[in-house]
View 1 (cartoon, one colour):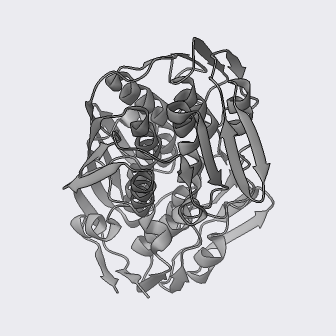
View 2 (tube, rainbow, N blue to C red; view 1 turned 180 degrees about the vertical axis):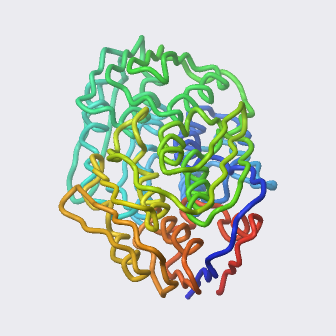
Length: 417
């Protein structure tokens, strides 16, 4: 069983280039099948979730080839419209292929998706959007079957600004006749990145980044090359690690505006943060103070994916910080593991209270989910002694090589297979 071993208490400093964004590249990979031709994705992160998407593409009949961090997808030979259960179970985001397959073929079949167990994440909004665009959707036996004689654009109003439902609706609308106007759309930067990729293919998508997105049905017209945006959650993780352990880090290739709520929280905790185009610099003494209530919310609010790593950064802060998780029900599963390291965290429903302690002690802990695993890396960097993190397959879903990256900052860390 693989483990990450980290000897904490080391000052961290150096420069890191941030990996491509997991939450951006997954819908972009699904979007490649809209075009029966060749696309090249630069800065494509080597993650297990990306590997799962590549396996889906190959199952559908596409060709996919890696060259360094460039991934070339050729969807000209796509011949299937079904995604089998064993591939769907590998990640939650696999459902994003539904809208793209439907737009390409007018027919799609798949089972319900898997992924981290963070509580109920129904795909009702996804299916409702597809139905309104003209698809017949049948749910039975743990599977989903969609069929249409022709998708038609219309006005769609989401009851919640769901990122996945927004992406699925945009992809399906690319294959619809006429214009689709999506109201109460998610505003995350990853939606903007998807729009840019689709426009690079020749699709007509406008408004991403706002609550109203307009898609005029138009098949992709040409091959394209595209560079995936930087991963703002990976950036937040490394900023939190340096904040907790003390030191100075320069992150390059990252848009500081996407990190504004995270950097504001770290500044309030006592860090010095400076943002410029394409870079962020953070300095920390490692002696942090508690901050005001942190409430997760859809973008531009505080990201739920950064909640766990910020919590880990504040475990030794002076005072108490309240976290309110408004997105997922089971987002505090990592708390028990942090307590093994001496953290003082109390949980009641969606609320967690972190009371800073003078010191953390290294311990044997296990990853409960992707971002919870990242929180253990942050806590381990600040703890005294050795922390052994197991079940690291969760971390590999979203972080390309955290051992390499933290070692580049001076951490004493290693991977044990």
